[in-house]
Image 1: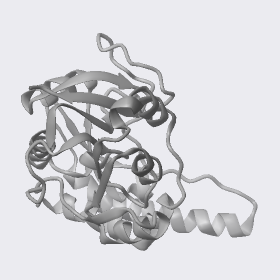
Image 2: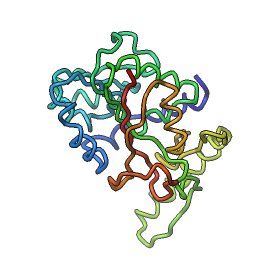
Image 3: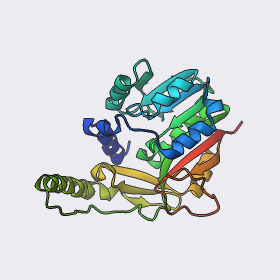
Length: 258
């Protein structure tokens, strides 16, 4: 595990971070995907990786014939278990899902850019594991950060207010952001097919993997998965022939090649 993966794990393992995801709702492109492919999800065997506090579990567990949720954060597992009582939710690592047989699941979900907290080699390992546990022709739905997005790289900013209580909160947040930024910017790097960026999320507390949809398609193909379609934040299908510059996240559907 690289140093920045440990930083990401600590961030997602913090109670303050887990509380952000409690009672969160589905995002528009997720609604579009789940509704469009509902006939393939309904009654099927579903694996929900990076389930967080149970945001996707509420819906997928009701549709699935068999529903299993895993997360790399014990804090998240605890929140999901409380929020979705009766759901099979346990600690799990996408890089090692040996507890599950080859081809066991019909649908694998990995929401909220969970893969982007991993380094490049571990990301590829995770994709191979996802392909292994999927049946031939099975679906994989996930999101990832968009390298083509024009606002991908940011610095901490501060906005003054005359409200003394809001001002104090903003000062505290700004100092937390600048502290994390100084610590984490050393991990940033730019490669031909991907980029590692100190993401503004959670007060610049994450080091995040960014990729274009064109390079993503090639990455999935190498893992034995075919990219079916990609959506932007508003739920629009992205034209794969053009760079997508106005959406920070990409929501994707892939299918396991037989």
